[in-house]
Length: 84
Image (tube, rainbow, N blue to C red; front, side, top):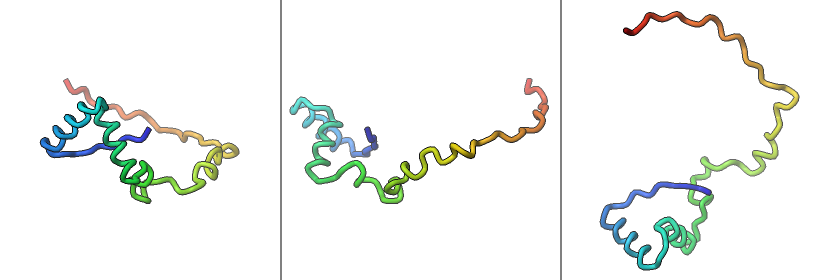
């Protein structure tokens, strides 16, 4: 499920909360219904640069199967003075 944050002035939030309460719905569901009525989907609400390109996962899944990652030597642990 996609999540997002909405910042509203207090008076608008209270009106939304009251409407949701009268309809017996959660605020989240009421907002989702409003977005659906407006023709906005979760993917369309995000800017294009924030979405994965088509076919991304199909092209990249398992791409390192024949070239596994290896952790390089980390060197010596740095000795530090005590704080107290």
